Length: 135
Image 1 (cartoon, rainbow, N blue to C red):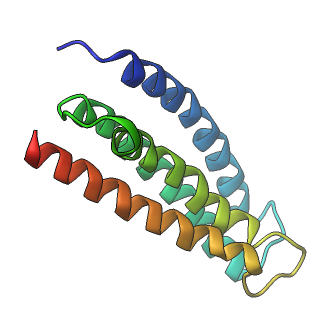
Image 2 (image 1 turned 45 degrees about the vertical axis):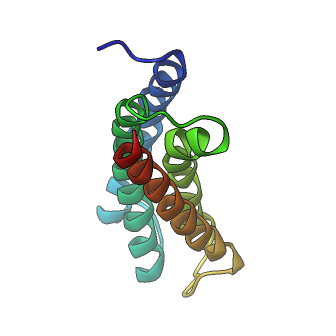
């Protein structure tokens, strides 16, 4: 099975993006070893952001293969193919950006990125699931 050009390009970008998750893992390792001064809240959000980034990028890679098996076009093709990848930016970004700041104990307004990413993730998976069932 050959990948479509769209899937091949996005898969390449996603694989390269996983290097940033690896770099984030080094930062998380510094946190848990006591090398970074963060609050318990910030450590939890760093863990959540790192985990979501890795899992969602892998899911986005899988979605490339599945999207090629649908007959979707236009907006729904984009949603099925790229929505999870965009959610992989929004959700971890929300965890990280909402916890930035010395001594922070609760999230700032950028926590909205987590909820926006979750909504996009759900819409993307529904679109892809329907696309597969109707192909």
